[in-house]
Image 1 (cartoon, rainbow, N blue to C red):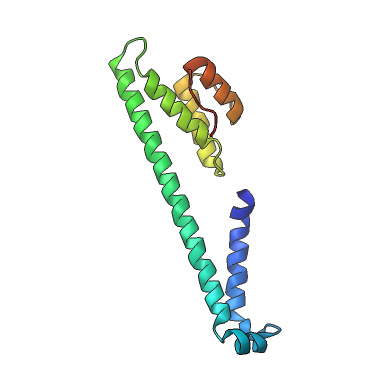
Image 2 (image 1 turned 180 degrees about the vertical axis):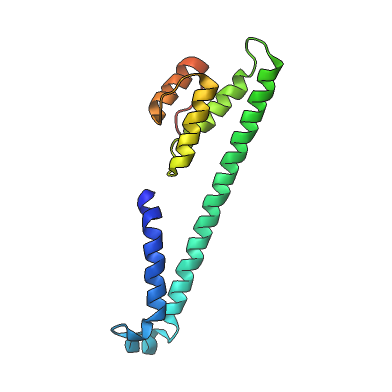
Length: 148
């Protein structure tokens, strides 16, 4: 995933140069004769449209994940405010599971924030080690966080 994120700007620049300088490309006359004079532009536009769709899908996925996290954290906070020995155990388990999944993010800020909140909620800091967090959650919360 990181390779994809790192290569996207280069691919976009390459497509821009391809569109701008298509008439100077070797074989541009053959492309224009056999595939149409606007073939390169159509290909570039199609790739850009697909890229926008992928970005929109990723944005929606992140938005859904953050909304789940916020809901779980609000429920946890509300249940902890209610007090009691077992207060918030289901909400805590849900929040921990969501935060553990967020550790798999390609964004270092998301991972760091997840570690910070996991440490705050659990009182334990296992860093960005997803497997260690899953083991901890299974042992201490009975969480079903198999990573699938």
